[in-house]
Image 1 (tube, one colour):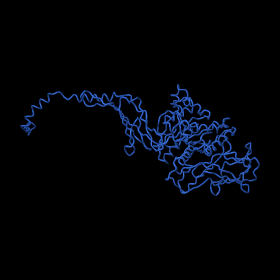
Image 2 (cartoon, one colour):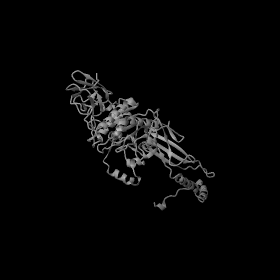
Image 3 (cartoon, one colour):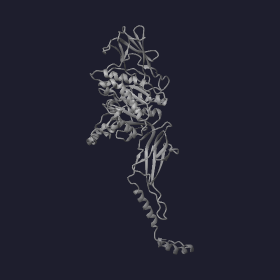
Image 4 (spheres, one colour):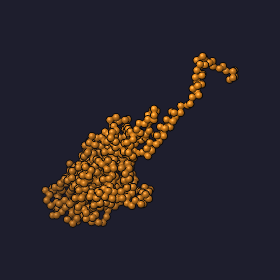
Length: 539
């Protein structure tokens, strides 16, 4: 049978009756109204605020949590939408939407600590009607991620905070550590953190006329820039499970005079004004300040006023941020390989050692035992250890975790047979608890239960401790110490002397610009340099 011979379907009476109706319907116009409506909607979607953007939050932004471990996240647009648009915001965490966080009064309120979060922002026009046609809406949609709620830490001071370590074997980035860069943009934190040339503030970036060319050259050729900020942030996030935002503000070669709070009104033309602007850009409240500065003051007559200026600086920052108990953790300056008078260096170091006992909510760690990558800048490996030391302070002070404290000199006493006993306070004794990584290793590893090793306790090394000396008023060494060893309770150092201590003698730890000091405790917290300590009236 051919195709032409195939049987045709039989037409029923029903189908025959419907043919005239179908034929009439085919003669009617096609439903062009729905097409026009669809085109109108698409046109309105394209036309509705075509330049609109979400300015805040930004991807990688970290919001400072409040006392209830929640934060409000402002939703800020590039133009005002309040008069002619409806805004809706949904937030999603790793496990789905957060129903308790709602959008009202321009903010997403009650966002809990954590992240990464994704924010879906919808902006639609007010309800419109076209005659009797259905409601037509138009709008824009934005998705911002990742966003976090955690802790913000300010990195301020001079070059050793800015970071001048070699960009080799640096701390790897963490998904829970972000940075507000010098350019005012949030990014995932990675070395180097500080790019002064990209700052909008002239105090950091200099002449704006050639800034672009200088920026390109810096980003192309840079080989230095590792700092302590990223190791600190990574250690904190790993140990506390709280996201960390680093607010970058440091500038090398600067003195306390240049950081003078009285220059706040100069805005971006002053270091202090620029720092306050950067903090306000981050939200205005922070968890704490990390500070490393003093080398510039140690090399000029300003050393004599360093303690006064630094104490006033701490108070001014707390007042300007309206955070009177703001934690302020800082570094005692380390070594400097140069042939200059060390007196100013001694004054600044000892002021830094003592301020932590006088000003509430402050703490000091030292760089006196760390290696350098040039004549004055702590090396990359040393900066990792320094960042973790600061993290241990923060963990102990703010989280009630094991963390650590800095072991500092408590008192000195004389014993028989020409012996001095130095008692230290704040010595860490984590017997049976988590131990830090071996400081000779370069990896950035936080103190966590997974790092538990054989228990260790107290000060170390047990023998041949370097850095102690007995000197005359003019700094001349009196060769008396032949052995320095940790005492049986491991919170003392016993100095064995070859003879009697002459009148007027002074005890030092870390005398001079480039001493060799190696006294640490079980958590790699180093003993700060100290001196002069008078030995005339010891009991």
